[in-house]
Image (cartoon, rainbow, N blue to C red; front, side):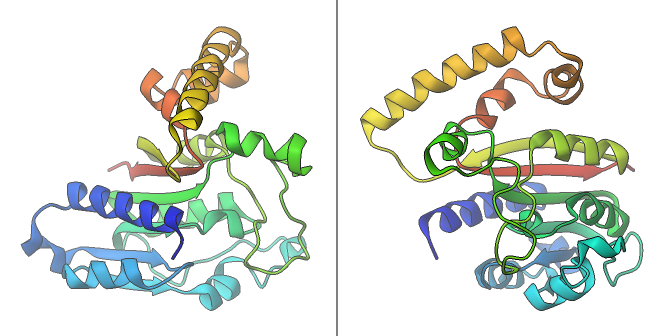
Length: 241
């Protein structure tokens, strides 16, 4: 497991522990875990007596991604009844599906009212991610093509897309976090300066209808600062009761 994955899983464990702090209630807490990376998080959940249902890569490929045939127009469908999970964990998964909005819609369908969705994805808003485009000739919006292997990124996900999807599926943003590799002191100072400049640019020049609708009206200053900080984005959303 790489450093980023360890940091993401450590952060998600902390979030889950805050959302469901009473151990004796875990046996009645049904969790759907999209297990794209490894079994460490699933093992931790089971050790804490959660009822865990796992969707592995093969199941995701067949039932959610439609066999990687986005041109068919079919909608991804999760093989579960409505309102049956208290928590959905989607770690480094959503960017691997060609239909992220439909996947989020299905997650909202199978979540119980008041249930939570925790997802992580590469943070395309961070300075490091934005530098990929001029330096590595890598587009922010289409890192890979549709015919590449299923473990590649099909749909890099922005916070705008997530906020739009939450609004359309009766979900609300609870909070967002970012994490990433540790940096040297010089890199931290440089990133701090760049992030401060980027934050002011977003606040002062992001006055278009798009920015008001998807950023400024829904994210606090703290969340905006977090959004541009590190390479991995972790988002917590809640289904309205």
